[in-house]
Every structure is written in structure tokens, then in C-alpha cells.
Amino acid sequence: MRKILRFIDKVNTLIGQLFSWCALILTLFVTYEVFSRYALHQPHAWAFDVMNMLYGALFMMAGAYTLGKNGHVRGDVLYGFFSVRLQASLDLLLYFLFFFPGIIALVWAGYNYASESWVINEHSTITANGPPIYPFKAIIPIAGFALFLQGFVEVVRCVICLKKGQWPSRDIDVEEVDVDKLKDMVHVSTQDIIQADTYITEKNGNTR
Image 1 (cartoon, rainbow, N blue to C red):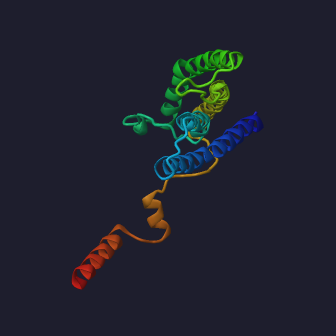
Image 2: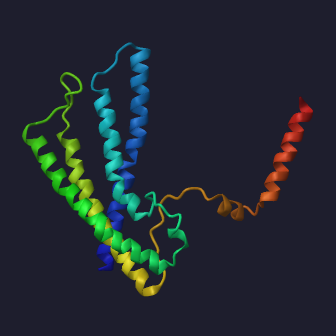
Image 3: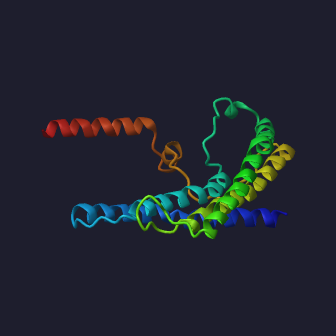
């Protein structure tokens, strides 16, 4: 069982890392399109569709990755004050009440939505001769299935937490910068930073 859960974690992490490149590709593409439109006077009618599909693919396929890293936005005004067992109990309840029904509906509806698009060879109607969008719509049920599998992993984590009284560890990938941890690593206190700011401000004032 542990091997299966770790495999799901690793696969969704790999998917998230792979689709994160869409952010860079989208940035470069938008930059090129702006240059082409205003400097070369050669806009591309299909550019808007491509931008939408790149962003949509990134947004959908990063869902399972974000869930696996516990990165989704949570209304934790009260949640953070609860004991870990109560947190796990609430998470477990909410997964079965809302998460799994919603994700199953997403996979079901997304599959029908994508299959119809493939059957009719659907193209974008935003512009004339728009690009094909059926491959993009196929991402919907795939992303939903990945979320469903990751949700199963999270349920197991809740059960482990209820048994052991602490949350099981997660694989570390990318973390936001924690200022307090960074200060501890370099042995710098808040007072040191204030003194440095004061010194730089006074020095700049004297040189003007």
C-alpha cells in the first residue's frame, strides 16, 4: 500500500513539475506575440487560443500536485488552532462530503465533454480557422482523475494522523521562502536587519 501511495505522490509531482514549464512557455509566447503585434505589425489570430490553452493546462494539471504538497488555499482561521487529530477528522469528513463527489462529477462530465469534442473534431470559434481544442479538453478528465488519486492519498494521510497523532511527512519539492527560517540559517536577528537599514539610510543621506 505504501508503495502505491508513494507512486501516486511521485507521479503527480512529476506531472506538476512537467506542466510548470507551461508558465515559462506562456511568458515567452506572450512576449513574442506582443513584439510581433506592435513591432512587426504581424499579429496572430490563434495566439489568444494558445494562451488560454497553455494557462488552462497549467491550472488543471497542477491541481493534484498542489494538493499533494498541501498548497491549496484553506480557510484556516480556526483550523490552525485545532489539534492535529481534529484537523484530520475534519479533513476526512470534508473529503467524503465534498471533494470526492465533486471530483467524480468532474471526471464524468469532463469525459463526456472531451469525447464529444473529439468526435466532432472541435476547433476554436473565437477566431476564423481557430486551432483544434479537443486535445485541450481531454485534459479535463485526466486532471480530475489525477486529483481523485491524490485525494485517496490524502485520506490515507488523515487516517495515519488519527492513529499516530501527527501528520505524516510529505516529499519536499519547492517551498515558499520563510523569512524566519532564512534569518535562523544566516544567524541574523530582526534587530540586526533594523540596524543595517538605519546605517544604509544614514549613509545614503550623508552622500546626497
